[in-house]
Length: 178
Length: 178
Image 1 (tube, rainbow over the protein chains, first blue to last red):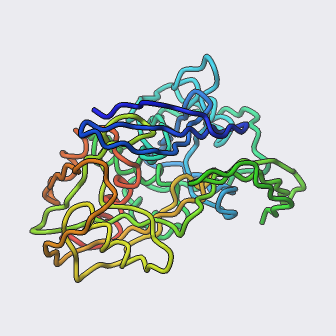
Image 2 (image 1 turned 180 degrees about the vertical axis):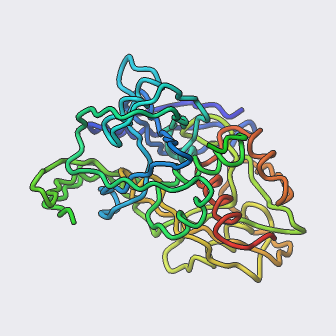
């Protein structure tokens, strides 16, 4: 197993930290790496299912300066469980809460250079419940039948890779059909 | 469409740049965002298919200090096409070149806060050809039959979200069965 011989913070902003790592491999090769470290408590992304439909969100994505297709998601607050964070984000972003949220998968984003992990959960037994979020504008909600996901997603653009991963995991790693 | 009123570079390292954006929405709400910008020419990830098997890579991933499952991938060099970069990365990482590489999808990572896009391509008609790469240690190669991907991936850990997305796209957006 490679060993991190030195870790140095080379940049820190409100949201991110960039570390420089000096790593020695078992064959004595040594390399420097820059990696992005989140500064929070991780993230959650929810697959909300109601009447055999999944509720997606179309939201402005600042990094690409365009709208993107995503699912309810957000940072886990300090002291909050994954399930609590999922229920809060759903109420803020799509106006539903759930009495049946199940953890599905802990997803790596791009583990070579970001340490960010997203807890993927599935939420069923939804009922209307609205919390105020910090969204700058109302989010567009799009429902898609669970049997029509491939056709729907193949026509969308700017899809968060975690959405495609989450749908693959839901369809292929579970026997969950909604 | 929201308008970026101001963009300021707040951090710059060898690999990354972090910008602070001040964005005004159509309803006059204003928000600040921090976004990570790559400093290169984009990236490519290859799905190499030979004898109905996909060749995966198990590689040390510095950001999570663990081994992760990925596919041949890397940055596109200056002046290089997506196809050329794919063929170079395959030769460096798995020891094959291809005379049949097709562009499949331009994948967003997490467009809310990273502008990174990865060109997903499929490579067939592989023949042995090795180029020296900059890998610090030999990469472990793992072949999986294209009909056994779900079982294989459900047992792996630390999978790059782009791998799960790429496999979903290959299976669901194309009629490509290898």
